[in-house]
Image (cartoon, one colour):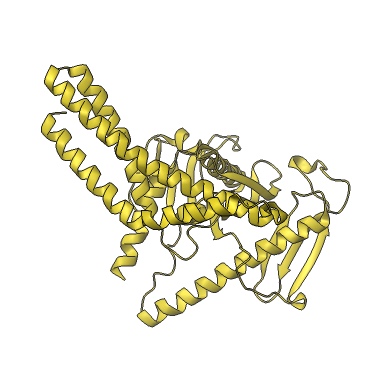
Length: 370
């Protein structure tokens, strides 16, 4: 990298960081930090454990955001000095180190820039993800389990907590469906672009003749419910069933009928929860899941009405938003954005940030054109 190239890249990164700071509104973040620190110092804060958790969690997030911006400014200043020293001493090795550091800084700033594109009403919230197997038999069920693992690994890599609410195992392999929470800043806004139909093409492990098989899985992402949300679900509109929790192969993991299934009769929405030992806890969690899904349904209906008034048919992305090809070649390709990679294993291991970034940018560009 020449000194002119480095200077141009540095100017561009500094300009991008300045625009990110404008969107994040650093003065407001600093004021919020002071208010949260004062609240956290209140001796009576933990009298309300749930509120205390919200305060400390938000404070941690705000501090991390401000520290990240300050660290980026420091790194940009340092890398500029690194390039100047490398140029003065004509040190090729030092140029290489400075170039690698500049590329790493660019990646972090890109991630921050993508975050600024998440401005939807619920984007800041935690996410509730449901993965369901579709057509394709055992391969589809196995694929659905791979997708679940992919999202859990992604969340782990980003330090997001996860909680599996319910898993319905298939008889031969994999899962019929699973619902889990991903708890972290902007988890919903980030993962919402994963909603849609995912397709896998591979040599079947479950076909005696080793033929190529295509399987499908559906991913649904809704924002987690918060106390400020207002939605009433009358008792007469729901049916509650209890049953015994079970694991893979039907192995009993509970000796009582503690698992809960709730059906919302008017809409047909069904939610289940079996991760808690208590039927009461499972019912409370299932009701929260139901309300979250009904809120999303209401939002989708409102959006569909607006789209209808516009004469537009863009309320959904349609089928097969992403293909995972394992045979006869290796490729994962997003059919909306065109982004692709040959690292199928890496994707299954949770390396989906580039897909998420491309999806967020794609969605934002669609919103601007409407």
